[in-house]
Amino acid sequence: MNLPNLNQAKIRTNKKPATINAKNIKSTKYQGKKFFLKTYGCQMNVHDSEEIKRILINLGFNETTNYEDADLIALNTCAIRENAHDKVFGFLGRVKHLKKAKPDLIVCVGGCMSELDSVANTLKEKYPFVDIVFGTHNINDLGRLILEHEDKQEIEVYSNEGDIYENIEYERDSKYSAWVNIMYGCDKFCTYCIVPYTRGKQRSRKMADILKEIEELKQAGYQEVTMLGQNVNAYGKDLAENYDFATLLENVAKIGIPRIRFVTSHPWDFTDEMIDIIAKYENIMPYIHLPLQSGSSKILRLMGRRYTKEEYLTLFHKIKERIPNVSITTDIIVGFPNETDEDFNETLDVVNTCQFDGAFTFIYSPREGTPAAKIKDTIPMNIKEERLQKLNKVINDYSLMHNQEYLGKTVKVLVTGPSEKGENMVCGYTETMKLVNIKNACEDIGKIIDVKITDAKSFSLDGEKEIFINN
Ligand code: 5AD
Ligand code: SF4
Image 1 (cartoon, rainbow, N blue to C red):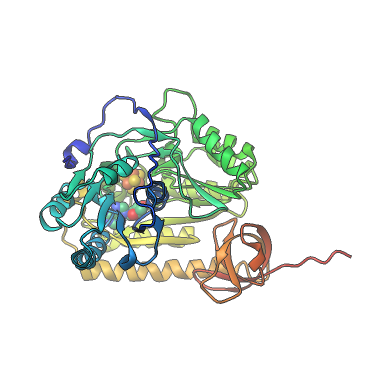
Image 2: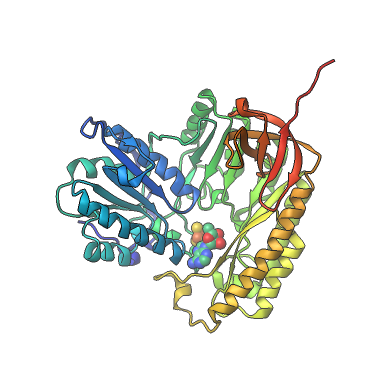
């Protein structure tokens, strides 16, 4: 048993991360058995789940989408806000009943929640039917943990700075659009955020390894890669080699994969060189997710964000000026401890100035062990909820406004799969990351096609495949 330790998790040393070759264990032990995997949280978790899936398939399992049918249930959890916890424990309540009827069911809990002392202890004391608890640092060991597991609960979670795994096998969800990790962890320690504790220190992959992976994805016919990291534009700062995110972006662009994206960017690490490279290459998509978090310089300082409202605005305008047709989305937290009406109004002012294409908005959720969780808060929850509603209204109006700018235009869309909006409809994303539901293009899944936009809503566009008649 190895329990996590949050105090240990925040220690940063000069130790270089080791590069470890992924195990990729193969076995037929579970042939004919089924697994159910549920993923909570960010794109990083979605991509980690692609690794978990492959590990399970390599042990002989097939996937089922009905958890009641499964022989193994795995939860890949998120710790970013309290409501993510509630969902996981709620689901585990249902699994408990299932396990009573099916004692051989194997239950695994991994991801960011497992990295928290309190969660690991709760699982140990109150959820003994959970067989395996693993963390973010040892996903690659899940195959061994399953093969070796016995009747007793096994908790194997590490709170180290972390290493880098190479040659990981993934069962990718899409054949057209792929996630590629370029770095792991985070060293920013924004005062509200649990990620630097759950994911370890910033570890950039070697540029050659990233380029090789993307080259292979291109050969396999992928149309799009999204480079992933908590803080992608700090890429390389932890490496002895003298290269940064701008160099990586340029080299990826030169591979010639049709679409390149990246998330998430931290305003503090955005350089002019990066803006120039994004503007220079047509295959780097004109879409940037640039978390603001707050429009008040006072709150930004308390959040440890390393920029002021003015610095954010300067960067925002520079990006808008230099990258034609760029769309910019953001993340905003309301109700950080002691956020006053004036502070909140400053956030609204920035939103009104930037007129973001979209935003993820959250009520601040205290995370045990982070500095912000120690601040005594005097703002009542109903005020925070009112602020969120007010903010969402403004955000949605701007999203709709931007979407309406597309009406009647023809845009390039990478068709990713069937649409939820109806039979014979598919969906995909514009270069600027707008979701489009498209009629008459069922045969175009996996292709980049021209779509004429016929309707605009706050969160999506409708369109029809443009047919060009040559005469
Ligand atoms: N409470 C609320 N929102 C948070 N985020 C991160 N930590 C917290 C927290 N403790 C938000 C930030 C971040 C996004 C991924 O989640 O806006 O950018
Ligand atoms: Fe969390 Fe800040 Fe790191 Fe983003 S940059 S993962 S908000 S600590």
